[in-house]
Amino acid sequence: MMAVERAAAVNTLDAYRRDLDDLDGFLARRRMTPLAAGGDDLAAYMRALADAGMAPRTQARRLSCLRQFYAFVFAEGWRADDPTSRLDAPRLGRPLPKYLSEAEVDSLLAAGRAVPGGQAPMMTALLELLYATGLRVSELVGLPYSAVARDPAVLMVRGKGDQERMVPLSDPARQALRDWLPVRQDILGKKKGSRWLFPGSGKSGHLTRSGFARALLRVGMVAGIDPRRLSPHVLRHAFATHLLGHGADLRVVQEMLGHADIATTEIYTHVLEEPKARLVNQHHPLAG
Image 1: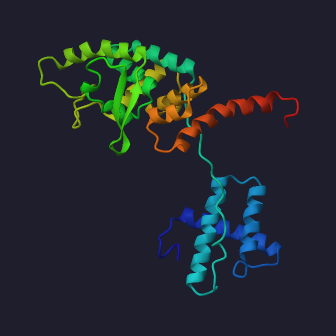
Image 2 (image 1 turned 45 degrees about the vertical axis):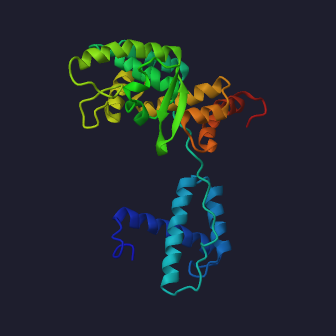
Image 3 (image 1 turned 90 degrees about the vertical axis):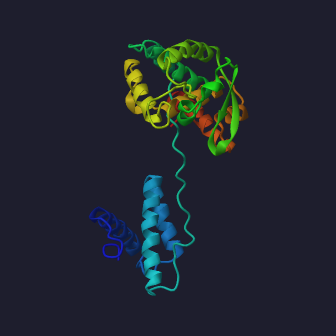
């Protein structure tokens, strides 16, 4: 069925075969066959995978194989029930977000200020704004000129779901904008004015997300930051992590990030807890 009806790839078929062979071997030791196995037998199999140290994502893939197998068995009438119906999926957890240290951000900002070819004011404004506000990259490149024309202390941002939020601007970010706006005007010259803070030549009329991401990687290389650890979203993570690390209220950070659910913001508290846990495990006299 997998090969003919779903046209599964050879590697997929091999993976399913290995998974079902493994189940068959486990059940054989319990004097049981896959067709006769009950929910308790399959639950014991899943527990054995966890006890053996199998990664949660691999366990989840194994469970997916079992569910598809028993759905097929049930559909063919070989069993009157599906024994996987009450099996719980393994807890996958959420991967911790990547972020830069405060020293790395300082190096990145310094590299932005040193960009050659007259691009430094724009790059500095982009970096200072991103780190000062935690904007999403689409929000950053899509900022209208009117949002900063009067040197505001607070930035009004229109984010996901067309929701507006206010984010305070740091002094360095405001100064970077003051330095950028005259340069922006010189670039535009006598051409028809642009409504965007960071004009671009593309269809949107403003700097694109990919264009900024490429420029960020170039600046990151000058700052000595591994490109695999750097993206516009990483600076958003750094903004939140550093604020919380310096004692900011979680709900205030939630509002500035534009998170609808505070649980999304809470992931940054886990980022801060990880180094503490590592420190205890490495140095506490009772640590295993």
